[in-house]
Image (cartoon, rainbow, N blue to C red; front, side, top):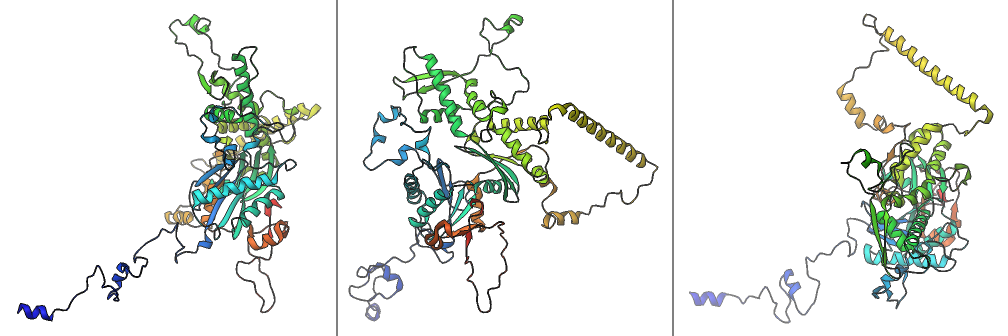
Length: 569
């Protein structure tokens, strides 16, 4: 019985190895056949490194870039922070064969500034003044930074990726054309959408209207934004560059005072001043009176004369090492002294206002002038939504100081554009005093009349009765978009600051929601005509216009006959 079963049993082929020279019987055996090497079934590849799948189109994806004078930020839409922030210092622009970075003594040597070179020029990508700007060097710096971003941080193919580029307003056309040429020519971007940084900062704050104060590197730009449109702009040179120079002057003075009289003058490098400003720089709050805090030695303190058991509070100090000086030294400086550069560079407390030019006004006066130039209804919205952004805005105490100085300036001057009335000043003050008294008198008379008419026995008319509140109506009013935002969002008429996540986060949100920008440049059109192919429109509208092209003549979806530079025109 067992021999018959063994005779009837057919020879089986192993599931793990096929017979040499025979065809596999099952599909699963294809992966184990040594004669025909194939990709194993069930192998998965990451969507980040592999080819795009069928569930989405790679050409609809975006790369979000923010361009500044000293940095470039990049990342993907929908993310709250960028993937990389690349700077343009001398260490990032080394040539092939330059191994000074790994020299043990390189980090302890102070770099000497080049002749006829401005402060921090080696760390800049561009400047708004193109008279002495090397455009070829700007293109090389930007191309190297973008290649590092794509190859080290993004890890994607740049060709099918569209770009959303956040730029500061009023960028010169030659500089913009050079940057776009790099992105279109070297990285084969299909299209680039240009967005303004103040508008993106407003989006990142969750607002539609705001006064954006961008404290950048070379200048501070105050922009009034109303319904996502830039309505007014003012500039001043009081920004990060001037603040860094004042910090370097302070450190040089303190080091020279501690050194020997015959020693050479100290010349702090840009890197050292920038490190000190970033780590221990701060800004004082606005003094409430003319008195200032004084520190006395232990034997001369007047407090100890009255209170013998009083504990003395010594003046706080900070010790700053300077390993790059020859020989290496350290500086012990009062902590309050480190706030003087901000007072001098940003607020200019020691200079009279009539000695300033229009482009070097203190920051709080510049914001006041910008608000004063806005229409009344726009001013009401913007003054309650002041967004202070930029790299220098992270200085401790700076935001609260700006808002306090601005509020004091408004209480002192009001919203009268005339500074002084000359010989008629007394008459003007008398008129203002009479108007204020009449307003208070009318208000008191109105309250008395209303209180008399609304006595306990007086009947109340239907027009003065408050309407009945129905719970379902309140819920529908909050859910419906027809009634606009809730009343808490329409606050205005008071000085108030609002935090923002930054221009890059606003661009990331716009790209994630697939919102089309006004300035959208196609690659083919730019390579053919450059910036000359753009048209300048008096009033740019985002509403699609209905155009009659004639019978049987149509235009493909998404195709534009021309494009505009928008605010950069």
